[in-house]
Amino acid sequence: MIEFSRHRLENGLEIILYPDYSTPMVAMDICYHVGSKHENPNRTGFAHLFEHLMFGGTKNIPDYDIPLQLAGGENNAYTTNDLTNYYLSLPKDNLETGFWLESDRMLELDFSESSLKVQQNVVIEEFKQRNLNQPYGDTWDLLRSLTYKQHPYKWTTIGKEISHIADATLDEVKEFFYRFYSPNNAVLVLSGNINEEHCLKLANKWFGGIPRRESLNAQLPVEPQQTEFRELTVERNVPDNMLYLAFHMADRLSREYYVCDLISDILSGGNSSRLYNRLVKEQQLFVELDAYISGDHDPGLFIVSGKLSKDCSIDKAQKAIWVELEKIRQDLVAPIELEKVKNKLEANHVYAQMGYLHMAQELATYENIGRAELINEQLEWYREITAEEIRHTAQNIFIPTNCSQLNYLAK
Image (cartoon, rainbow, N blue to C red; front, side, top):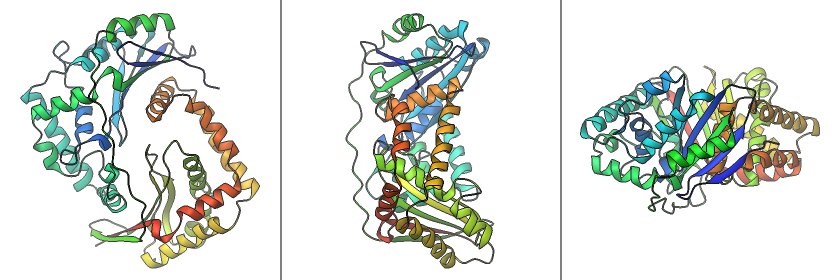
């Protein structure tokens, strides 16, 4: 059982404290409830742009990195479809430096045309490098636009196109900041060698005066049920043909999500898994083959993706995958196979608790999903899943009318 305490400031900032006295360090994680799914469809990439802007300085602190490094700290951040997460670690004696830095940039950034231009250029170059100049770089862009027609998961965190970032105005950037970067749209997690009373005093001192901002997330469009098989074929300058099969699945708070996670491990969890043994090792149709879930908070995707052997056609490859999917649809998973997968998941869950920084990020993520307490409940959910549930879920998900196939061919 992972034990932590939770608190809330008057301005709405949620605080989660997780003591771990095995380390002299403290991790501070600030997770904002804003990801690419909250963006204007004509201004995509803003959540990711802000990941860069937040390190560009405030009116009071022109350089974020220097004071943190002088305090012996490190920092980083990431953006997903669902959230934007900023985290740092530093020695416990210098914890207040982290409070000072993070509260100041939650209050107000140093908005200027020059600072915006710098970060726009950085993001545009990243877009070119990631999507345009890297082999298979546009895969997720193609796959998401194929599988989603209404929900904003249909674009990636980097954005739909360069112009959405290049044409962004300072007023649009300010509006995005004051809409989403507020204490009542965030959670602060402290993990490591902490004194809870001291942490709460620092939180009130540095964050308590930041005002609430009421203009928060709008209702997102719901993705309608897919009712037809979809297929897209593209040719690119890449070394090998790739095949992707994507199936719609449940949201992160659904029991079905955890069933799908188990199915992905049964199919592709290591060199003893079904897909590796049968399609990579025995039949040698694929060089690489994986099954995984997208991990999105709203209804996401179950994906099977593989790099084909040189003499294997797309048609032969996809038929072989469907044979394996049909087996898990029709036959109950053997008790020993199911137990093996569950034990591996439980071991990973226990191992993750050994890292104070990882725990801060996990607690922040679960709070963003719904409640940080889910970090304890999910393990029991995995343990309760039966072979009958796996077969039932597979029968509902692995059907042609719920499948989008991307054929990514080498020229």
